[in-house]
Image (cartoon, rainbow, N blue to C red; front, side, top):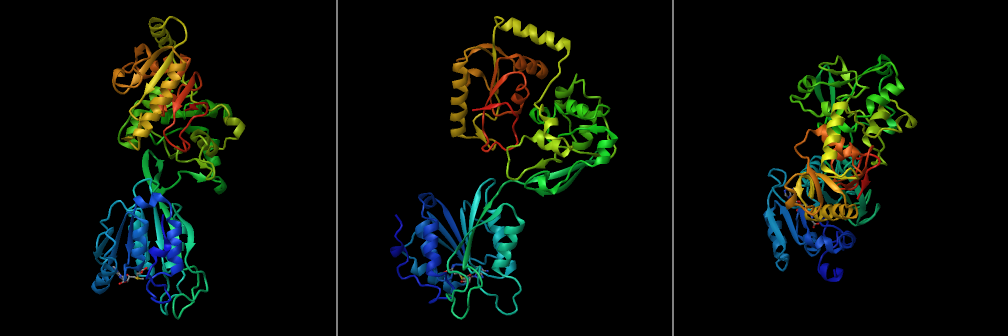
Length: 492
Ligand SMILES: C[S@@+](CC[C@H](N)C(=O)[O-])C[C@H]1O[C@@H](n2cnc3c(N)ncnc32)[C@H](O)[C@@H]1O
């Protein structure tokens, strides 16, 4: 339990020492970081001065690292905090040395208050934030009036970043209010301080493909265009009715979500031509090719040609219309919206496949051989099973195992299965095994999956291709799932 009286014993207000924060600021720091979770975290203070706020922070966090370039102040701060063993004092110039700190959760920025310095502090702090994690940044002297001759200061820097960087948000103001005389000789023109949060969501590169060449345009938080921007496929392109569809990602599931598009385009534009890229074109654009376009579109009666070259622009899947307030709109709908489809024209947009008569004969023969002619299921355990961000994650492993075992146990059927390691080493070794079809041609696997009563998998693009034909259960890995889903999947 934090006791503000003990924490603030002998600590001055800004009215007594202009370089430190006000007592109100310090009280509100204690309040903001009152939850136990912070007791496990590390705070970095930029600008120690006499170590007064440092002392307060040392009660709130497991560890405080504080930086000061002035030797006298550095020693003073160490002296008054001798009884606080969790403070690491560093005498360094923060503007001319590397910020080689690790595992920082909070940065208290209170050093040089000029705009370029604050911008450096912000950039350096954001760089310390791990991918997909957040950092709290606390700023002092946000509302301090500018001294004569200074054009921009703390407030200008913070306001600018909050406005321009979507991942950087203002959480709350802190300390004395606008008009306060806490700083001797000056009146605050805004709140004394501000607390912000930066979330290091990975940016995506918006890419265009023009005359078979790939161009990186810019880095964005969201690919595509916001609904209200009103940007859609140019009318001239639609009028020419010679379409090529292209995904910038290369996975089977990535391409699978486009598989209904040729039919939908032909329904909307009966005389149009629909092309998909050949391996030659994929190589020209990306420097490498893959089989997934072929796997998805072979035998599709709505695809006219696998093309080796396209003159002008291919409007790839980065051209999409998203709704910032609703991340759960399937990507195919976002793409079709850019292609000027109305909602009713894209109702039937689940993935679809077209197998040849020979493929059907082969698939049916395998099913007949391995089952008694009754219902069967398919199990898919991909290498993303039990992982988060590509690494083993114990909670996800436990959850994936449990929900998939539950569905398998309540559906005791013979199962065709694909597991990324031998099934005897998985939580699914108990199933009634029809056949390990891991090494079978992918289109035949997909045919068998389409005939299964149920499909069970961890979150994986391949299972999306069966949802039109079979009841599909998928153990969700991403929360929220964002647009990476297909309608009809039962997420468990
Ligand atoms: C406003 S005071 C910090 C007050 C302190 N955080 C508190 O709340 O009590 C700013 C401090 O930054 C220090 N400073 C200025 N330039 C610096 C630099 N380049 N590197 C490290 N510290 C610097 C100053 O010496 C000064 O002590």
